[in-house]
Amino acid sequence: MDRCNMKRSRGFTLVELLVVMVIVGLLAALVGPKLFPKLGKGKQSAAKAQIALLGQALDQMRLDAGRYPTAQEGLSALVAKPGGEENWEGPYLTKGLPNDPWGKSYVYQCPGAHGEYDLYSYGRDGVQGGEGEDKDVTNWE
Image (cartoon, rainbow, N blue to C red; front, side, top):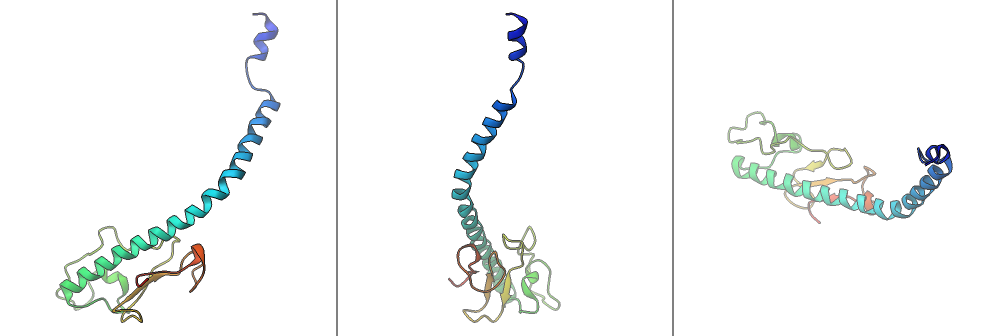
């Protein structure tokens, strides 16, 4: 091999790097929009699963204490003993009280409008109602 060929084989040219960057950008533009809606559905599913687990913890507290936490006690009664509650056998959540997948607290009401208690997340937008990822996730639907 002569010196001229050795210099050419040492690295990539600017044109080659630009071509690769354009190809990667095109792939991201084509694939990205198809993946992002699935991310929102995943968060909705995670919220449903967390609400189901919180419901099981609430039911376990009811079995032990004979009642659900009051609205004033809230979901924190699942991890810390409410004042004056002698039959509390918790904590009922081993990893603490989770936030919803969007980082907001779950809403708990007892008595609830749809059952003995209502437990829900307002979704990504944090306000009642909505469509898609903004849709509320509840324990009664």
